[in-house]
Length: 169
Image 1 (cartoon, rainbow, N blue to C red):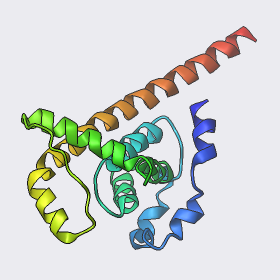
Image 2: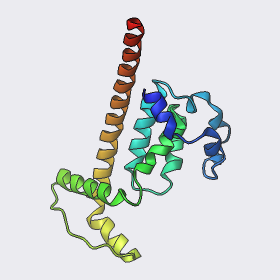
Image 3: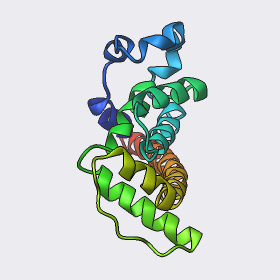
C-alpha cells in the first residue's frame, strides 16, 4: 500500500538527473538504491525530506539530494518532500518554529512586522533569529524522526496485512 501510493507522487529519475542544480552530483546519481522504493529507502527518504523542509534556507532540494546520496535513501522522495515548505505553508511553519524556539530559550515572543529591506533582515536576525533557528532545528529533528518511524511502521503493517491476506486465500 505505501509503495504504490508514494510512487504516484514521486518525480521520475530522468527528470531529477536532468535538473540543472542536481547535475553537479554526476555519477553519484547512478546508485540504484537512490531510485528504488523499498522498506529501507522510503523511511530514510522521509526523514531526510522532512528534516530539510524545516531548514530556512534556499536550495533545499539540493541539500535533500546531497543527504539522500549520503544516506543512500530514495532521492526523488527526499527531494519531493521539501516542497512541504512552500509559499503557502512557510509562514505558518516558521512562525510555529519561532514560538517553539522562544519557549525553549525562555524568551517572550516578540511582535514583528515584516519589511522587505536588508536593514529589517539584519535587525531581525539579532532579535528573533536565535529562537527561530533553534525552533527550526528542533522541529526538523522531531519531524524527521516521526516521519521515519511512521513510514517504517506503515510499511511493516502493509507487508503483514498482505501476508495475512495470502493465507486467507
